Length: 188
Image (tube, rainbow, N blue to C red; front, side, top):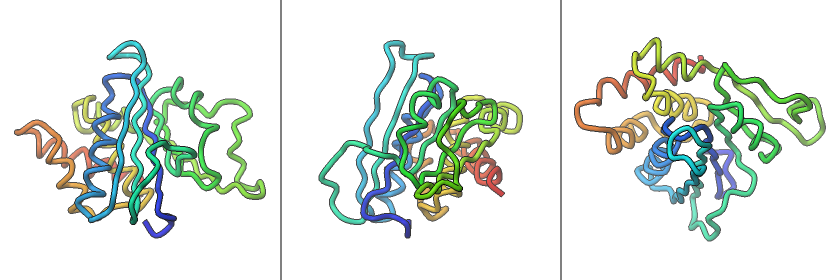
């Protein structure tokens, strides 16, 4: 987290049921395990499953006095609707992680040659990895957490594994550790 000016803002987006809220909670938990401060919040669409969902985590070295994400340093989008809605509202140096099934909207402001913009976009097969490699589509959020941490360099592997284990059902530890490792491996 060396690039953090006391606030590192993360916005995770997708559809209800994809686990972006749990992923956001896990990231906040990993921050606390490492002695950082964290704030986590979420918003659902009108439908619990299938509607758009957004979860945000703010991580800081010092006390965090403002709980709203202004311009996320990291955006995860697992659905096209979420990508279209939130892409333009990111920091100039944001890391943007999208599922490989998604496409950047026409006219997306991601030109890294533009002065003042150094956004990086990564398109990774998060949903496919959870479904085909892990065998459980519901682990897409843990696959994403592994990729997020690897791309942003936020936490130690031990802190992240500990945070995941605190928020998954008992008996699914091996499955979720495989999903976490698969997400990390996607970034190589």
